[in-house]
Length: 331
Image (cartoon, rainbow, N blue to C red; front, side, top):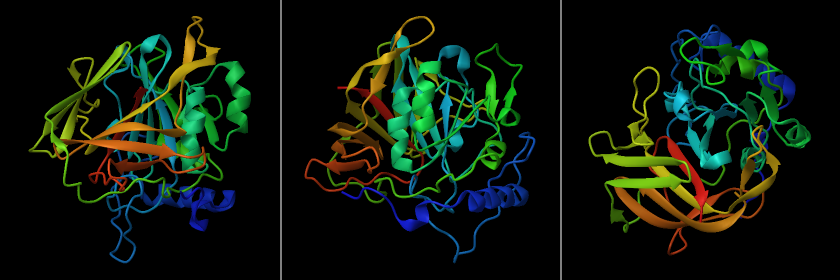
């Protein structure tokens, strides 16, 4: 299995800073500097057009930005989550869930609400090279691990101009990220590259599936197939999931990745043990696409390696083109 990476993957800090500044000036990411309204995206010419490694859709390679997003009831609806390429769902304390959203193809004006990072994020993000990670903070004992990880850590305290407080809900559920500004403050961020996902025609088998529910100890996700939209409509804890501008969250592919969720050595402020979700190893998976469910296997041999999804016959399993949700849940 391929481990790391083509030479296009990393840039020097100066090159990334120049690219971020130029991109913001030209509105290539569709963001205004104030975060109020996106600027028009300039479509690439046919010679420039490329395909996203994360969605299979046309996109120019851009820096990878991961954002840790709150997901308890008071934090909903979310802002900007529909623009993410990849949406990971992880278990946190008390059986609740939290989202790690990965952006590269598109940057919305704002993303949030933003919350604190967890130890599991560091292993999960290794496959992206050296991504930027935006989060509201982390417990002090986790700080040395974050500093040692190959990420560009940009919490609220290090890039205060890239965060704003909303007035629509109480703290701590009202902190929002301005993605364009946070990337302008970043240095040495990796561009999107191959992390093992493949897009294309579906396998010939699979079971017709209208709905799939994924349960965590204190959270529940339901995905209902919409033939009209050719997407899976998301519901969280029994309520349709929408963004703050009314858009229904609707990925093209949903992956239920079964893995080990074990206690870590860290605890939250209330004393609850923080779970650690293993993302290196192998195991079962269920892939939903095109109104069908496919039994699959996942494998990631090392933290720096790709995550590969295969069919029961051992062939690479293609995802549908578009946003991908990956729910990391206990076996």
